[in-house]
Length: 184
Ligand code: 5GP
Image (tube, rainbow, N blue to C red; front, side, top):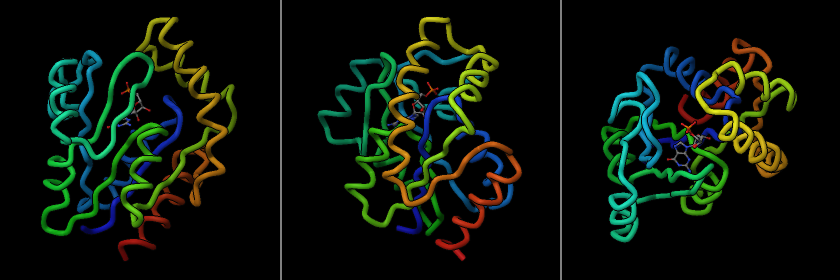
């Protein structure tokens, strides 16, 4: 399999935006669409934002060994389907996964060659503002995400690559350099 990039970091840190910017620069980079049991947000399309699954379907696929990694996060389940990853990597394309910390650890353990990158905010306050600004969650869900974020931030030490998302341009350039190291 060609290069597999794992982008992790707390909710609201801007993982999705950074990945979109990287994919603008590198059209060959495929994004693995995750599975989740959470409800779609307005505008999120099934098969594009996520593969939206019921709890039963998620369980069934988990029992069948269909996930490369999976995790519970803020009351919902998320996971990377092996078939999705393989389909994206077909033809030797590099693939990027956007996943939370527990999943990133599982991928690191299972795929020694995966390039894991931790995206960090400038500060916890910056993260708080971003989550608030996104306004996608009700206050209770947001509080839960912030609490998780605080513990997730401590894990940055585990990662060889840490990109601080203080400015989109600068962070994208840094990500770009890492990308080129493994694909160039
Ligand atoms: P959200 O509900 O905001 O879309 O995602 C919540 C968290 O789950 C984010 O940190 C996101 O990166 C993570 N996530 C999305 N897909 C996956 C996945 O397939 N596996 C894991 N472990 N986490 C995921």
